[in-house]
Structure formats: structure tokens, C-alpha cells
Length: 250
Ligand code: XBP
Ligand code: MG
Image (cartoon, rainbow, N blue to C red; front, side, top):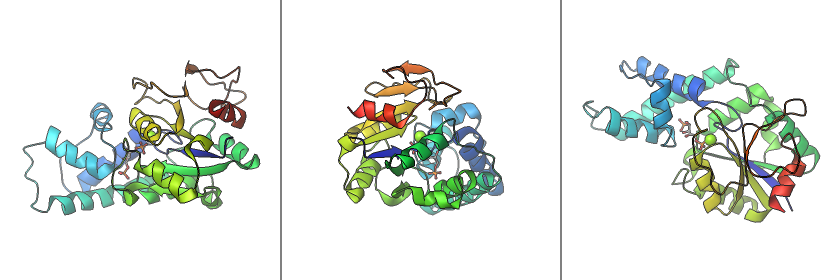
């Protein structure tokens, strides 16, 4: 029995990375007088590391080892990352990042069917709330029983912590929930929490391996804009519906 849908945000609800997070990182670097610039291609590599602070640290270690980092590296990274979060929220508030095809319809359909909604994401909480406010309206925050985000758990995806946090807080069993993800790290996180997962790929994740996913699609689709099925059985469905979600748990 399907009780809840648990959404990832970045890459799943919205294509936030290339034109959102990446741009905001670069703006923050520039404002701090750093000559770092994360290209679209380099950012694709850096995405293997989830979490913005973790990503900056990894970049310094692997891609910019000659940079003379301040003694208080943790604080330096935290400061840069706070500036990045501000810039990112500004980009969202400008309406630069829409929700992906089918996301709003699926949320509405789930609400109408009494399916509970949750978010399990690596990103910082304001990034989620500002996205929701500027795409679905302020009241949409209440559609979610729980928005689990960022540093509330010690280990980010691919660790299962954030999904386990949602399940424990809500008292839901893994076999009552379906996770919706876009990446290998997201799938690994959900799978280790014993959740079945449906994937919608994007440009940064289309080459990822999604072994073990219940379904792999190019997007959730709409009644007049069908999805493409990359792996799994949709039993004739042409867009991702609550019925299809139910069939994946059966
Ligand atoms: C998303 C992320 C995030 C964002 C940046 O992963 O990796 O780190 O890129 O967010 P997922 P912050 O979709 O698997 O949750 O800079 O706020 O950390
Ligand atoms: Mg994601």
C-alpha cells in the first residue's frame, strides 16, 4: 500500500544544478575575489560529491591544491557557502528555475488521493522553501509532512541517513513509501534505507547507473507529453501517476 512519496529536490523536482547552484557558487567565489570558475563540465564532475560545503572542500583538495587556504578552512568554506546560499535563493526568487515536467501535477494528484508527501534532500533548507514558494506558492510548504534537508543528519547522500530520518520521524515503513530521485547517489541513499525508487534522469545524470531502480524515466511526463521509459515496466502508463507509483510498490 502506497502511503507516501518522498521527493529528492535537486535534479528531481527542478533542474537546479547547472543554472542554479553552479551559477550561485561562481557568484560567491567572485564576490570573495577568488578566481575560481566552475564550468558546466567541471561541475558535472564535482556533483559526485553531494553537499555544497563538501563540494568546495573536495574542489580545493583535488582541483586547486595550490590555493593557500586560510587556517580556519572550515569557517572559510562555511562563509563562502552561506554567500552561495544567498545568491542561489536570489536566483530562485527571480523565477529562474521552474519545476520539472509533471512535478506539480503529481503533487496535486497525490494530495487529492490522500498520499502523504515528504522531501529528503542534501541541499540547504532555505533552498527548498524558496523553490517551493516561487513555483507553487507559499502554502505549498504545508503540503509536505516533513521537509528533511541539509545538515540535519551527519552523513549526506549516498548515505541513507536523510531517508531514515524521514521514515523514523513519520513512523512510516519503507515498503509504504516510494522515493523519487535523479542520481546514482540519491538511488544509493534510498536503497540503503530499503526504499523502492523511481528515477527521472537529467543532463547531469543520464550516464549514471540505476541498477536496482524500480523505474527509470526521462521525466514524470504529462497526459499530453508522455515520458520516455529507460528501464522498468510502466504497464502502459504514459505519465507518472499515483496509480503507477502504487503499482511499483505492489
Ligand atoms: C544535491 C546536492 C546539493 C546541491 C547544493 O544532491 O548535492 O549539494 O548541489 O546544495 P541531492 P547546498 O539531489 O542528491 O540531494 O550547496 O545547499 O549543499
Ligand atoms: Mg538529486
